[in-house]
Image (cartoon, rainbow, N blue to C red; front, side, top):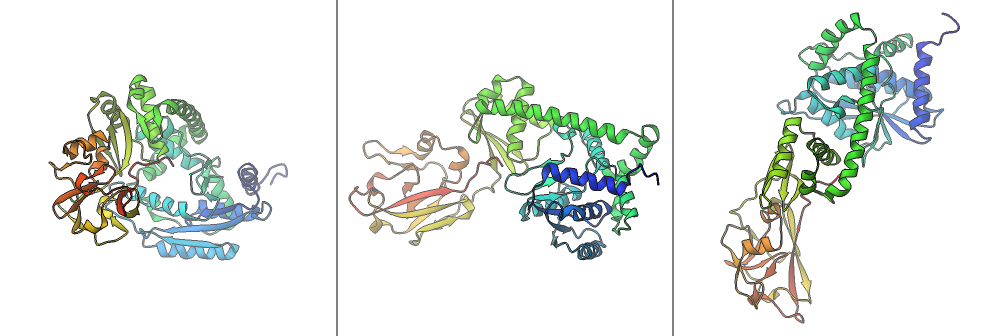
Length: 453
């Protein structure tokens, strides 16, 4: 070998060292996502070489998907590799739903990341390389993705409340990784599904990209450069959305009037930001445009509800909210109170509290045959002794209670008499004086609105 040249082995070690200098700090806990394949095995060996120099707490994690008949053998291989390197290994087994609407690949990926988020680590190191990056851009092109989708994978991605994701090999061709593995006599496993061209990524890798290689050998670098340009543009769009959010997003609600004041492209950008901040799947362009049309085109008193996976986009009084999907409440059911200080109502996603009070409330001596029901329609209550009986529907509207809270608001009955509505009022003839011992009933619903992060 020419003495002036540096071996691929040393090149890859240098890449890892530069990455460590830029992103890691002494004492960081780094867990390598170890599948047993050549890419993750090489990454583990590289990090093992530099871990002492950079004082890293290195470990590995293997996700046992159970899809392949060889899955147990792969887990055993990961155990052997980690024993040889004296690196702690965690193995997590996940159960996948083969009938999931998301598809088996997406379901497996979601399961992996659900495990990663719970790991006690500062960083999860993943072995994606330049070929993976290029394939991802092609896949996003075929899906008609926008700027953010075409920016593909970042070297570093931080998630609130969990480890950061680090991809040290993202600027390295897979051929260099294979060369390093061969030169260092590493052993690894081969996933037979990687040869199955029914999977779109495999079809690209095995059938399409080799043809491109014959005519344009620099395609990996060019595609990666395009992904970098898209990432830069996506960052600028995020900055614009952050500026719009200062006016257009009030806590967890999106101002539909402000949305309407923006041009359609900028409004869609803000709506995407609203979804992204809540870590929800991004709607497609047509779906997003339809959501926007409904949010800004509806009458002021319209109650819009648009399902989106595990979330629901709802509009109320000129604002949009992203809510968790909840099962339809059991309208015909009754719940009994038997003197508990708190009564959990999981079907209504909340808890009733019965608190001692010296500042007014219900007479505890009269609280007999207490049962809880949902609205059926036509209920009436007189919470103000100076005013006539009111329709419960009107009282809830006056209180500006959102529809999704009205649907699950428990009504308190004594026998068949409505005596109290939490947060609204107590029937006049059931109210006690301020100086008397009383019971105050409070309703605490579970959080329905999805918060950022």
